[in-house]
Structure formats: structure tokens, C-alpha cells
Amino acid sequence: MRLEGKIAIVTGGGSGFGEGIVRKFVAEGARVVVADRDATSAARVAGSAGSRARAITADVTVDADVAAMVAAAIEGFGGLDILVNNAGVIHAAHPLESLPEELFDRIFAVNAKALYLTARHVVPHFKRAKAGTILNIGSTGGVRPRPNLTWYNATKGWVITATRGMAIELAPFGIRVNAINPGAGDTPLLKNFMGGDNPEMRAKLLATIPFGRYTTPQDIGNTAAFLCSDEASMITGVALEVDGGRCI
Image 1 (cartoon, rainbow, N blue to C red):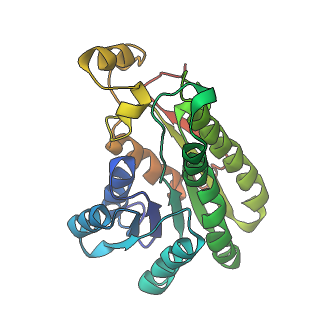
Image 2 (cartoon, rainbow, N blue to C red):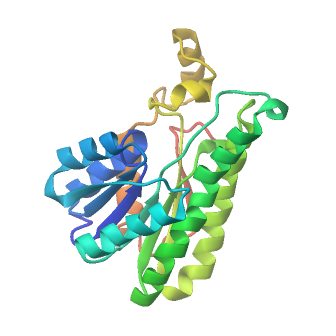
């Protein structure tokens, strides 16, 4: 119960790594706002997690939605201790010069601008409390880019740099900021990451992972629970690869 008494928001909590984080946080005693654009997915995850979780429909690229999401935690649960910026999107494998502008704008808005929007509403609360933890979900693509995913990789590199900048600026206020860089996971984003999905593609990708398996939502949930717990009270500004050794 390392998160007993903590109140958290997990964006993109309705599927994939976000769902794994929500389930682990609840198991560790936290109360969690499950935020997702997909109302059905958010409700499914929150409903299966019991009374410690509440669903809210929110688009993290819309300031009013972010404000409502934060209010749902503070007013509904009585406070806020942890923010997990997990929501993210990826584009299909695409030559960098031919990615449509509207798709570039969407990727940047979800993967990068959303961190700015959530910070605007969460950081003042954390500063008043002189405590708080922010966890950003990056990607191994931010440190070991793959061809034809250049603009996605770039947004995840932005996440890593933003994490470190936030950490050093917010440390005097008792606020910790870290990131996790997941490796390839068998989630809805995998098809785009590989540029398709068939046994040959999966075998080729697995051959690049020393542990020989994909990163699971449970792997990310376990790491997130540690980094957001008091056991990690001296850790800030870290971007931790959880990738089975792929980035070595």
C-alpha cells in the first residue's frame, strides 16, 4: 500500500499503459481519476477498479477539459498528490517530409502541449501544498529514434527535456518530476510503431529486445508506482527506460 492516502490523475487511463498504471495505483491504495477522451474506456477501467477510481472524459489538448479534470480530483477526492501525463498518440510509419501537417499538429498537441496545459492547472496547487509528484510518459523513441517515426520521436525527446527542466525548476517547492520511457508494448499503438502488424514484423522487433518480450502495462504500472511513492523521494529529473534492455 505504498500509495495509501494519495490522490492521482492518470491521463489516457482508459487503455494500454495508462490502464496498467491506474490498476497498480488503486492496488497500492491510491484514489485515481481516470481521464480519457474515450468515455467508454475510462468508465470501464474506473468501474472495474471500484470506489477508489472515478472516470472523467477529457481531451488533454483542450484547456477547459484539463481544468475540469483537475477539479474532479481536488473537489471529488479532496486533493491531488500525483499527476501522470500518460496520454499519447503516434503516427503510422511515414517518411518525415510527407507527414500531413494536421497530423503533426495533433501529435505535438497530445504528446507535448498537454504537459504544458496540465502544468498550468496542477503546479499552482502543488506549490501551495509544497509537495507533489508529476510523472511523464515518454518513449524509448526519444532516446533511440526509429526511422519513419521522426516527428513522434521528436515529441518524446521534448517530453524528456521538459521533464528535466520541470524537475530543476520545481525542486525548491518540494515537487518531483520524472519520466518513464517504455519500450515497445503490445498495446493499440504497436501497429503504428512497427509500420504494420504481422508475425514477421513482431519477430523482427522482438529480436531487438534483449529480454525477448514486449513491455507490458504491468511493467509500466509497477515502475510508476515506485517513482510516485515516498520510497522515491530523492529521485527527480530521471527519464527511466523500461524496455528490457533495448536501449543499451
